[in-house]
Image (tube, rainbow, N blue to C red):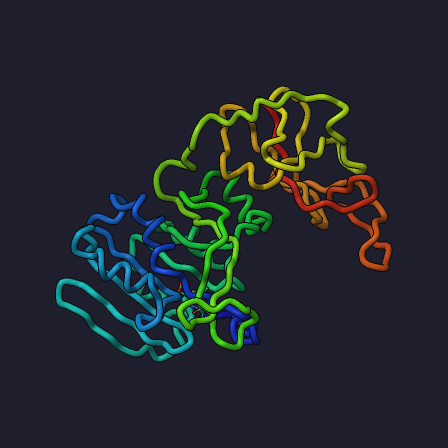
Length: 314
Ligand SMILES: C[S@@+](CC[C@H](N)C(=O)[O-])C[C@H]1O[C@@H](n2cnc3c(N)ncnc32)[C@H](O)[C@@H]1O
């Protein structure tokens, strides 16, 4: 059953209604077509009247040889099953929370979970799906790599990025959401997102990573509070520096394990756990708005900088 905390967050005014465009789904799934043959696919955050995941998988079901589709939606509790018998629509007893016993029972037989889960429950969702042992291909915000649990899965190679990574994607949103963009009469919102998956053997390398840039002590500064050099953009990562490099997370889009080891994350965490890959810097006073606060995150020239991926040349 859903925990009280889950219910509070999902129902407590969280803005989770970001509907994925059909092409966004197709552009990623097409790369994993072979994974779907003979499989049972569940989309557990998907109202079959609204979700393009449902539309897309119904469209390709025959061609891709998908055995069965199971769609459940929250909070309406509607479900749809599409199999050789045809289409069966029904209503669950509860509200369709993916963690409820009822939904878990219904999707138990699924081989693959494919959805865009609620942004407010993304961490919980990915922990659940990894522990379920199922294959998955799900959409999440680009910055989710900075969530400790997600990074740990990534570092252990239990999850990785799909083909489409850190791209601004358009989602249809309800009329009361904050957005001034209207496309074809519908309100839309742009969010930077990546696909997360465990299809295949690991993150596909696009090409050997080589910025062609050499280290020069005049061009790179060490953090005030951590022994690593700060690199502003992916294209400035020096290929010949032997120490720790604080790289932007966009390095991971082109991650090349033959060249760099991913050591961990340097972020504004409370505690460090180097074994798990979470690092913190020495405490520093930094200015935040009008206030001075203590930070353990990466600090450069007295200013806090955004979290970094720590990499080291192999
Ligand atoms: C980001 S939207 C995406 C909707 C749909 N999957 C799509 O891609 O178009 C996430 C959806 O998850 C639903 N949701 C929120 N809490 C949920 C829960 N506990 N269990 C299942 N779905 C939930 C929201 O109502 C919302 O429709």
